[in-house]
Amino acid sequence: MKVAGCGRGKVLTPEEFRKIKQHIHFKYQVFFDIMWNTGARVSEVCKLRFVDVVNGTLVIRKGNTKGKSETREIPIPPDLIDKINKLSQENGFMFAGMGGNNHITRYTIDKVLRNACKECGLEGVSTHSFRRTTITQLSRNSVSLRVIQKISGHRNLNVLQNYVDVDDNEIVSALQTRWS
Image (tube, rainbow, N blue to C red; front, side, top):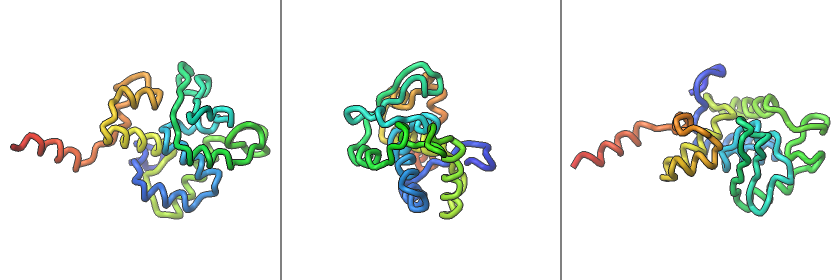
């Protein structure tokens, strides 16, 4: 768990995610919905433009990715597209920064999330929690690591495996398959 900026962000339950969303403005709800549904990095979502929604997919351009090596296209649900279309279109960015001249900053998103978590009593949550949650849930739903790698943009499977959270119940269940 993340404490004072150190450690790994908590993997969120759907209920915890709902609680967070109850304490934030619509614009930020959409921001975190994108992270929740795609596993995108906070910096990637900050730089999204309205033109990056193409035929039911979210295009994360290679210049906005961590390694700046590959554009990713991630399918998103129609209800999320509807929410994106309801955002204010000030300057082309989905999430305009202060003054409307550029995109929102990671610092602003982090501050919004910290305040919401404080209001609903959640600890250990960071902006990276959404990425870890998406990757962990995909793994728990038996999606192959190779497919998760393609969605998340990880170039290295070893790094990707660090994102997958394993709880005690999963360990017991796995071992029980051998107890016959």
